[in-house]
Image 1 (cartoon, helix red, strand yellow):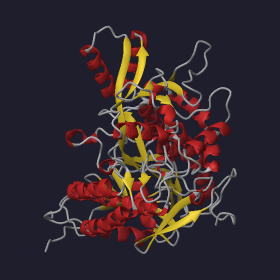
Image 2 (tube, helix red, strand yellow; image 1 turned 45 degrees about the vertical axis):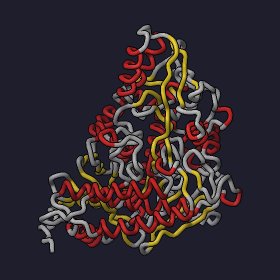
Image 3 (spheres, rainbow, N blue to C red; image 1 turned 60 degrees about the vertical axis):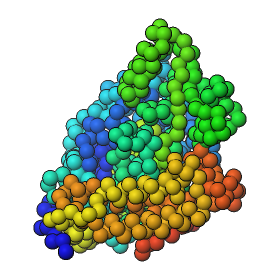
Image 4 (cartoon, helix red, strand yellow; image 1 turned 180 degrees about the vertical axis):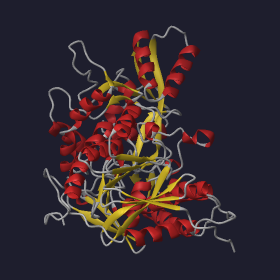
Length: 571
């Protein structure tokens, strides 16, 4: 029998609010709460200068309402792109704030391109071009300068202090410092979504060369699921169409250089499939499966245009710039003529920034648990957020949080008891000697299970009822295995907890996939038993974890401008 070590050393802090996740949404929410005189704990597992999805920068603000359009146009676009399964109220409230967030970022020092008339240089009508390599450092500097914001870095949140339908704070593992207990009557979940659930598109040493940050373990989703929060639309997984190997965005070429998608025969093919996000992924995948691959982005570009593309990728994916330069050197060296970049799908991810998976929230971004809010990639129902959408949601959440805190409407209780239970659970995983099974073994088994039985790359993104049932059984066995795994040292404990977080999210995801009995987003996944759209399935697939089971809840589409959890029409 393994001998348990001394329980984790613990420090307790009390704040008016806690924000979990130091990405774009988390930084802005902390700033806005502090502006209202509320003491805020900002809890981040890395460092806020280079954390979150904007860690490497961006070359465009992809959520913007361009000239000649209004917020309703953006909401309609996002709703249509999601084939009807999104929240109109969330999209509209977000779209009304997109341009304001762009102006605020420019005020921080972000360089936004301007045209000859001095207006923002639009790339299409939904985004503006930026030099955004320093976007995250600018946000971090603003958060650090905000009076009343206390930042806890290298602190990975593990538990919500949740009981009796409300939260009272969070517990986090602090690198080399034991555990933190942060008591707060209001908590904003602003972590990223979940990567690493499926076998990655790039294997071996390149497995971290992923479209979505590999350190996004689904922690925020897992904490909410374990606490009994209602989740929505996890089954709308996101599969990114990206440049092969580097996983760089394709929009830089498609929008910035007018590149067309062509197959291995040089034939344009997009018109045969449609132009929604899911359909673009489906097109490249089908062309390859049917023997007309590989697929490429093809554009004619002058030397000047090529240099502009090189600079654009330097702002967010330098490896793609190096790849393009390498190919140019291998060619005629003139820098003129056709640019041809191979493209392909990523593995599936669960997140609410590009698609709609995450917490079920009301228009004010309140979750179904009292005292808990969600914004950004962890918040469901509002796809096509990108950076400015995440900021807009954070601002809305901070506003309703401040109202609740300052209005005295929050009365959490039992923080001490809940914290003790969380710390006991973490301490029980520590041992003087590690067991034979480690975190990497659990994650590898998880990824293999999801890849083969829940619509990953290895199964061609296809799944059926039998496969999903097999996935459920295997995930249950893996959860049992993980609960009995013991590790030595706090670093290994954090790694084991991340594997457990991914298992929690995977289990809910499979339940969602099984419940939506149609194929609404064929580029993201195909349900072999239920091909095609089914009008009877036009509703939200939601879920709540109760007593170890995932209970599915179907909710009618929200089509108005507002939604509240207590509204009779939706309860």
